[in-house]
Each structure stands twice: as C-alpha cells, then as structure tokens.
Length: 622
Image 1 (tube, helix red, strand yellow):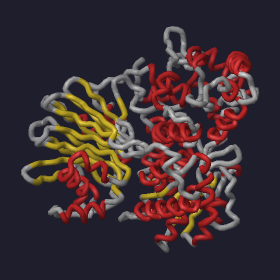
Image 2 (tube, rainbow, N blue to C red):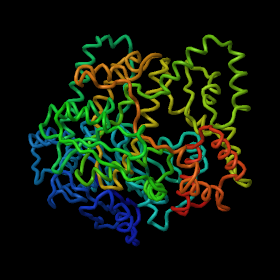
Image 3 (cartoon, one colour):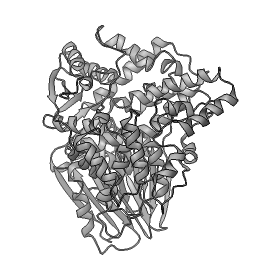
Image 4 (tube, rainbow, N blue to C red):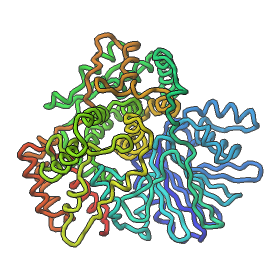
C-alpha cells in the first residue's frame, strides 16, 4: 500500500517543490520510504510514499523505470497485484527478466508487453500512473471495485493526480473552490458519487476505468476497461448446490492469494458472516492465522468479541482481543483531515480505532468488505421488497397522497418518513433511496440566505441506476457501483491508512464480483424473509453449528447518546452555529430540537459538522 502523486504537462515545470510537499502529506500511506522522479525534459514528475509489503529491499523502490526494446516506461503504483506470480511466469516465458520479487516490476513489464490491455489480466486492488515516453502518454488506472483512490485535475496544459486530494492541494496554483452540485449530492447521499468531486474542477477516476493523457495533443481520454456483467435468468440455471461449490472455491482461492505478503498478516474478525467466512478459508490455507477482534468498553451492544472468540476457537487461530480507547472529539477532527471529501459514516470512528490497534501487530489485515453489496445484506434491500409488496394494496392515488403528506407534515428524522415518501416510486424502473439524509425540499432550506442549492441531486443520480426490472438486482448493483466504492471503501482506506495498515478485501476479487452479479439469482440474495441468503448457506457448510447467522451488527457508534450532552454536543453546536457556517441557524436549531424529541437526526447533524470541519480544515472557498 502506498501513496502516489504526479504531474504530466506539455510545458516544462519550473516549480517542483510542491511535489515533495504533497508526497509527504501522505506519509501515513507509506512510512517506510519515499521517492521522486522527474523526466529529463521536465514534463513529467512522479512522487511516491511506500508501505513495504512485498520485496522489502530497495529493489521495490518507486518510482520504478523499465527500458525494453529502446522504449522507456516509468511507474508509480498503489495497491497489490495478487496474481503477480502467474503473470511473472508468463512474462518470463515471453523473454522478460526480473531483478526483484516486486509486483511493481511485474506491472511495468505487463504494460511493456501488452500495453493498456494488461488491465484485463490484473487481479488486485490498485491505482497507478505509468508514463510511456515513446508514445508521450500518461496512463492512469483504478481497480474494478475502486478499493484504491485516485483524484485528478486537468487544467491548462497539465494533468495533476494523487491518491489523496490533500496532496494536490499542496500545489498553491491549484483551486480550492466548492462545487455546489457535489455539495447537493453529499447532503442527499452522505458522499460524493462517481467521477464527481466536492471541489470544482477535480474528478475521481471511476472504479474499473482508465485514463490516457496525450502530451502531444494535450487531450484526455477515459474509458471503462471493465463493467459489471448482466444477470440473465435464462442463461443461469445452476443449482443451489453448484453455486455454493463455486462460491466456496472462489472465496478460498481469493483468500489464499491475499494472504501472501513479506510482512505479518492478520484478519479483522468481527464474528459476523463475512469475516467469519474469510477466517474459515484462511484456516484452510495456513496453520498460523492471526485474528483480531475489538471490544468497546461501556457499549456492550457494540461489542462483538464473544462472537469472534467462538470462530477463532473453532478454527484454532492465534486470536487477540483488543480494547479500543473511548472515542473523543479529537478523533472526528483527525478523520476530517484524513478523508479528503466530507463523508457521512460514523463507523469510520471504530474503524480507525480498530486499525490503530491492529497495526501494532500486523502490517496487512484481511476484512469482509463487499459481502453486503454483492449478496444483498443490507436492511434497505429487504425494505425495498416490503415497499414493493405494500404498493399492491394501496391505490396509486392514495400512495401519492401519503407520500406528499409525509414529505410536508412529518418531521425530519421521523422513523418511516423516507419509507412513506417513497410509496409513489415506480419500482419497476426507479430506486428510491430510503436512507437519504436530506430530501430536495430540506436541502433548499439548509443553506443561509445568499447561498442556494438547485437540489437536482435526484436527477443526477439517475445515471447510476440500471434499467433492469428486478428490484434487488437493481439495488445491489447501485450499492456496489456507488455506495461501496464512494463511501464504504473510502472509509476503510482512509481510516486504515492513517494508521499505515493495509486492509484487503477477499470478497472483492473480481471473479467473485462477476459470479455474484451474473450467476446468483436475486432470490438467493434478499427476499421478504431473509438477507444474504447464499452466503448464509455457505456458513452452514463451513462454520460451526452454533454460529449465529441472524445477527447483523457491523461497526457502529452510539452517536445519538454522544450528542445529547458533553464534548460531542458542544462540538456540534459550536461548529454549526458559528457565524462562518454555511448553514441556516434556524434549521440547525430545528434539527437539534427534533433530535431531542427522539427523532433520528444524529447522522444528519454529523453530515453538516463533517462538511463544516472539512471546509475550514482545507480552507475551501465558496
């Protein structure tokens, strides 16, 4: 795991000092080493921070160059290529010779041999930049699930890119202007989706995409080198038993690959379905598996150590139970500096605390991310089916009246409000966001006089929806392409990398992703009576009989309790009622008042606090 930063330009770069400053703003991503390289013509600058995972010697140092057939290639790379041993053998057969055990060297040679088509061969999580001097082109690429981040901005004659936005902002010539359309999306969804960025002019390279910057033409071209496969009921008639066999085989192989490292590897074991399955597969691959669970003193409902202990004992792992320190307001402020874009996910707090403790024992940890998105594990998947079922019994006209009344009458945070406002949705083609933070009506009221949101986020979101008729398939695809990439994985990446811990996700091997969306029927994901059905059937095969398959906790914090009194309450009030705040104090008082009456506005208030703290930390212009 590493941090990358660079520039490619049609003009010679005179100001180079910002590159090393930006690189070292990401020292948490790579505390083991740093590097910088400039092309002889002064048009290309690459910087790198290294967290040594494979090839711990200087032979793995980046930026890395390769000369072959009178052509020169330069690379900076963040991530892991899990199938590099197989690629190495294939490349050696084609005449390549290697000097290290590094997957970075394999990636360079893969491009030299196959060009951008090498992306189809890569199994892993990655974001990289590769300069092809003979073609005068810069290639940027990001893995299929978007596990590793990559921001960029094309301005004038130059293209700038980095693993983290904060690194780019070390360049004083680059803008810091708020994009109000992205703010609108953030207030609705809790994150900024797709290729959009919270700052004007910047973009994120989307998952499964590549970008080529041609220096000769000063042109940018991006494309999807991979897409989710379509579900075809007629083409997929495999039995449940056959599907379980294939899933078991794929998961075991993915875990086996991801256990490879030249540093200690552990497993983040919560005791839930996903992490327990990863542990089961790891136990087949090694007799020396380390597992870690974390307890949160004073919050018994959020403590999963007993469930994790059961799994660890069954598989005979070397198990460590860690006790997390109490969360403080300082943690929120630290994470705001880390996340680059504001993000509404309070589970980033326990994720940070957990990874901080695990880093004392390991450099790499395997987790269970992806299981809910691929196999239908979220509560809103089931709620959508309930909504669809209930619509049959309510006349269309009355559904519209109920929806309109709920939107105008029920207070923000009223339980079931978003469900009722979604009653008039056309579920054969739409996907109502039951967990929306702020509706269009409320978003228009949130900002102070003098600022305005067009509140068109709902229309912008339509481009992320597939047109298939199955509701569960549509929902899980949206969660994979949007929520997983732009919130869940961002949370894990930033919260773990601030502690210099690499977290890997075996469930997100692209072969498992393709299996889940092309072969597993929606009826084996979510129904009115069950969630994550196929995965839970796999637990019946490989986990102990006493394993609790119905439990669904996940990392969470008692935010509503925190903001009733004390330091968290003070922080929230001080930030949101500050005279420099962008938000209307009347709306802030209303949200707090409704929260005090028992309505659920904790995360909505957290969204506004996150944004204001982020804006001040990064000195963002309105």
